[in-house]
Image (cartoon, rainbow, N blue to C red; front, side):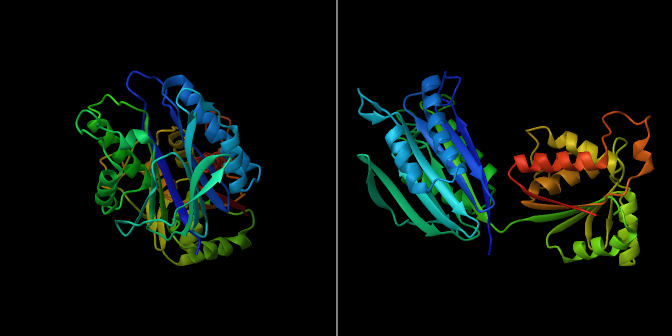
Length: 386
């Protein structure tokens, strides 16, 4: 069974520094995800450059097909050593997770990875190897849906030292805190933010070190199928309906004509929701077996505008945010890991009207841009044309 890796990170720069000395780089391929957390020696601009260089070297080598062991060796040989402190200029943690859940972790002088299963800390089969005179910890194990991996820079372990806590927020204390958080089943984004928020409190809002938490949560993929516009050939109407019926996960239909085709083929009718009317967005409805039915080009164009805001995130449950076709469609797209668009090539003559606003792009272009935006967010997107 293929899994999905929900991955996010959050961090704080050392007090009075503009740049954080920690850096995270991520590479996603169809077969695996690699995440690197690098912690530069010291703080500020110099530490930021060193950690970014380290993380970039590692991820660039992966993009070029290098083996993980080769990457570790290259980074170990490349990193200079501070003559005064006899320390490497950057520490790092590398986490590789395949779509089958096989995990490889390599650590160099970073705090030990936290691995949680069913709300409990699970010891990992660590062993040490020596590469170019440097001691590298590594381990391999099999992850399953529900597992959580958290790697942190030493700013987390040092939180509160000499202030709120005499010895800092030690590894075991962080582990106990994570066990409480994980039992509430947060996503990776929420979990990383809560860890950093706790650190900020322990530092009394004056972090004594760069502080970063990188979270990977393993889960089953959330899928979404979106039918957009009618097909060129009417013979394909039934085919699109069949594809929608066969797909798992949530299903959305965009476009009045497309919705009518679905209703006709399914022998039912669209129920429009008149309780959530919004003067700026056409109303939405539901269809038996379909989670959401919206108007076409206007809703898609406004959804694209919303997605282009890098701060746009899935709407939390019980949120008081405005509920309309655009916010609902955006929420479905952002919550999903694998999204399949069934795009009809039939051209609506109304969309060729020169009196329409210039930003009212054609359906095909809007869908393509939505797909590109989602891919930039780490989603797996497939476009099928009819």
